[in-house]
Amino acid sequence: MRKVLLPLLAIAATATPAMANEARIEARGGVFWSPGYTQDAYGVAAGYDFDLGETTFAGVEVSGDKIADTGTKVAWGFTGRAGAKVSEQGKLYATGGYTTETCNLCNNETVHAGAGYQQGFGNKLYGKVEYRHFFLDQNRPDGNAVFAGLGVKF
Image 1 (cartoon, rainbow, N blue to C red):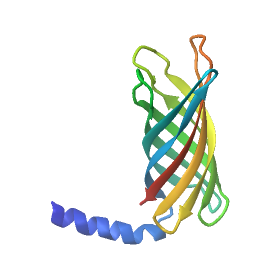
Image 2: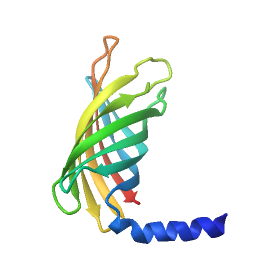
Image 3: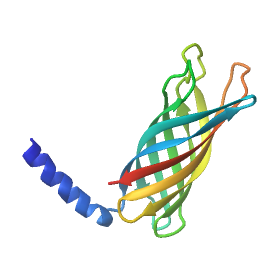
Image 4: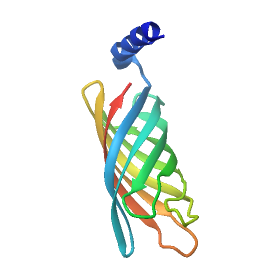
């Protein structure tokens, strides 16, 4: 199996610049806050962007983020994003999606919306900064997060 997969991965890696659409994975860290509460957070994400023309794109992303506090768990995010290619390697975008509950004793699944900027560094690497607003219910104040990520495009 390895004899088949390794050559296919090598072909995919060298063909990536010619592909219009791209898959990506990233590691990220940042801060989550709501009134009276601030905590660092970290996570991972994987996504795929589809070209909608020369200057626009849309994509999907699955993420797992953890607020670094006792009593929290990984919150799984399912996000769509759409935006504009503002330079050869820069993307400005808006996001929206759904996030599962973030703590052990709460039931606060939520929708989120935000915006971000992604900048490519060569053919494979990219960095991004993203803001998300979480619309919480159950008489709890809304939450916010800012993440910086570093990833690889395929």
